[in-house]
Image (cartoon, rainbow, N blue to C red):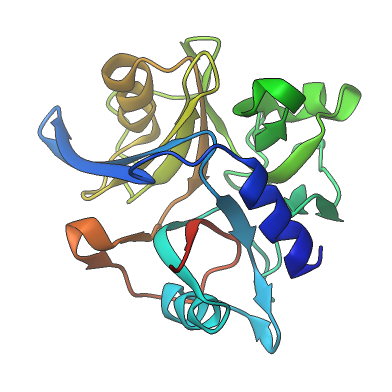
Length: 248
């Protein structure tokens, strides 16, 4: 979508003080960082710029500065192929750039059920965040302004993914997103130590109290949070979810 249309959408959203609130927490002796984004903030997805994939936060930041915009939060936003393209549903600024995938398969993405994180623009009631299981989404698609598919689901209707095992020795750095029951807050979480899926999912359910949460990725998990003086480096990444503000 053209930049003018993006600007019009941002103007239509209610402007709230404090775009993102980030904090460090500890759960069962493991460290996590949680960043809450409220519906109405200018939350966008990015994967490619004028010269190719952004691949990192610095390149995205440079691009936004040239547009007279500021990057205030960012996190890797789902799994990708060797060309850094998303492997599942990807909707950016209202345009579907990759179709939804409903089959099972190898790796974490194919560990069904997986899901879709979506921002829905709902008329006078304003935008809301939603996480929907992928096959349900395929049967009843939402009108998403932005959406990314990843997997597995971490929490579904308050229940952990059935294949997660307490005490599993499959440890990794992980990041994901959960949404409040009313869709007004999206909580982005990254582990600062290696944890298993069961422990990571319980941060969303038992600490944050969310009933729907989605895994975004593992070893490449990355966070940009200037308020915490944090801008993670590492291997190139594909989709990036980010909160953007217009410069004065």
